[in-house]
Image (cartoon, rainbow, N blue to C red; front, side, top):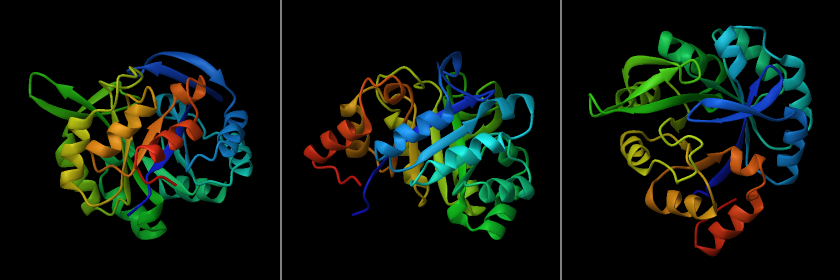
Length: 252
């Protein structure tokens, strides 16, 4: 049985880690290098670093911060935010990233997924999916630019498309559940895992250790990702893993 992973996420804006609720009301949390060191000691399974300022404003990648962050880690580092060319990916991998997360650029040019997968290997390419439920259409749709721009792409269509294009993993954020801490969006995640055969990281809604137990017992996702509960030390990754293990969930 594949062991489940627990992954903290750093949303980085203008060189600082921030966190909001449903992608709004961002507050300052700290410096990414300090937080990377903390999560490395906490024995997180991976660390996701999303440069949300890069996506919004198109400014230069924070390669110096990324390099310093990677130097503190002995766990895999996934970098995302405004990555739009093969050169961007190459530069990030050369500066310490292990995996790359694509969102807006992939939706804008789906062929980019195939090009990136062919050049760097599918194990390097994670597609971030920001999904929001639309009552009018009774369906989930994909959003870009930090949840600000709605696309016409149905989430359930998109996840199948990106797998066929060579994506190696999905990072699925339920915008409706993000930062609310009431548990993960099991309905969305169940629908997605029924459609794809690549690992799915669940994001949005993790508020306590039991939410991770429920997530892994009720869906087939490979990993649970959270930010604010770990940043604010409401719980720790070690505590979550201990609870999962005690509940019979196989964790790393």
